Amino acid sequence: MNMNRLMAHIFSHGYRIRTIPVKKLLFMALLLTGMSACAPLKHFWTEYNKSPFEKGMEALEKKRYQSALILFRQVPPDSEKYPEALQAVSQISYLKGEWYFEKKRYKSAFAQLNTILEGQPDYDKALALKNRALFEVELSLYEKASGDAKREAFENLVLLTKENREAERFRKIIKMITHEMEQTQSLLEVMSLTKLFHEATSTQSDPGLLNEALFEIIPVIQRFQASPSLMMVMMEAIAQLKYQIKQASSPKG
Image (cartoon, rainbow, N blue to C red; front, top):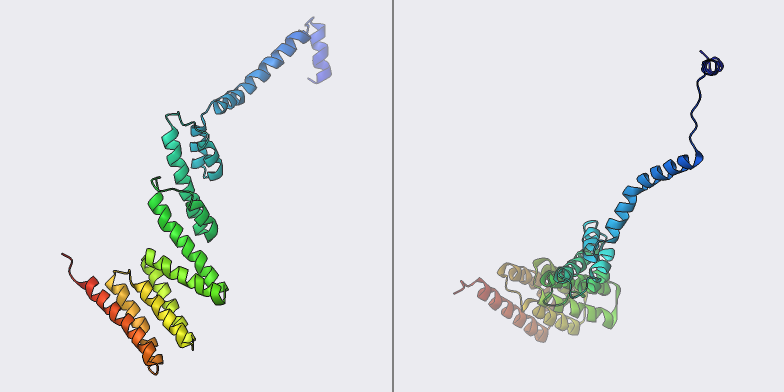
């Protein structure tokens, strides 16, 4: 049965098509629209009513560190969540600094980690990583600079090595010093480098690392046997190093 025959059949049997008033139709449309908008509207009000701390935690979980920092700093001091917010700010500063360090953006890492103050959570970890970042910054300056700027960067590297005696950094600075000794023809420069060598080893307490330093410098000394004054300075440094090795190797207690 096609459409025309169907319509004819309906009207021939007296059927009437029921019409819906326009006002009722509009009401039904608005009702359906309201129902469909109900869930997003509820979600909006739920999000709107969340505290800065709750929003900060959500941002932190999504690694949106900058947004999280802004939100945690909006937590008022009289809030019961204020101590947790302070802890979260410290944690975020460390996580951002760590991320910068992994990306080899050492200056940014140092600046970020420097915002963590003594007494705050993660301070010890931040201090260690901050020193590593500063070492890499100075190393980059040393590699690019010349003259007095290069010497200043080198001295800063030695100072940082004294403050943080981790093995990798210690080995690197000892190799740098002995390499400079091998390259220079200036006796004054060699004497200066020998003093830096002594500075770098003076606070190291690992006998294994001290022995490595001893084996690094002994071959270099042979180049300068013709200079008695220089040999005296270098032998003093070696004697001090051997004494440190002996002390470090002695049983404690």
